[in-house]
Image (tube, rainbow, N blue to C red; front, top):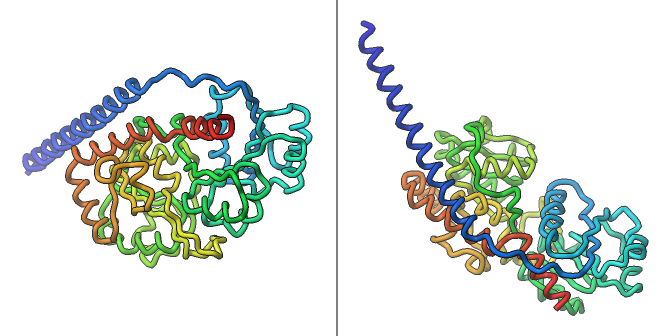
Length: 370
């Protein structure tokens, strides 16, 4: 009576051993390739520019502190000195004390207009990097004209600001902080078949509701605000980290542990929190695009018009145009490990080569200080 049970136990043990060996081999190949790419992309540091930057943080809660950290890290090694200030401080007085060559402001929503006016009247160059275009353009329409230089992560906002009379307007997408979003081994608690991290805007709710039948039987992680809006919430609740705003480090862990990360850009028509009364269409990819790819994980993203300028679809990033196509590609890539890894690793290589904050800020400074 015990012999069949013993055989079943032995078969289960062997199956577990083989699955573990296979998973270890896959992860070892992935990390070996990533290490080789990162070594191969080591290049000489950019010459340090003899300038002093006074950097003014966004002054808002999550996720902005992580963006501030990424920009500050990106500036290190590019310039002679960086002084960091909060928008609640007397920034004009600090500039008078330190005499920076440039005051760079992230977002610009909190820093008072009179502070920016004082800076410009004193002859100090000012620049703002908008973080949420085009979704908060009802606010930025009054902020942009205060600055000498405007940088926006949304290509379609360049003509918008120029029509306001702003002379120096440039498209500069966000990027990845490679100190945080990079390939690494993660514990089993972070591992999944499919991962989605982000706020539950209505178009995302619709997507996850449509995917519910295939997500129910997979190892899935969904995290962010408002996911209790789902019609199928009760079916997926054990997979949802409701209301969690993860740290960048935890987000990177979940990206590294996933086989597939889904990316769906927010809609300009979703007025949950949008302030885009002119309904400026979004053409550019979100910052999450670069962060997922920086972790050498396959990303399946909806398509933005500017996407082909930052990644090669099908080679460096996976894309979809409908719910049905996404379902098909999830099923396909979960069954085709080699193809999934190849795209993910190509995406990581492209990200580290072209899409870091260090690269972006070097571009910005070359524009302002030619």
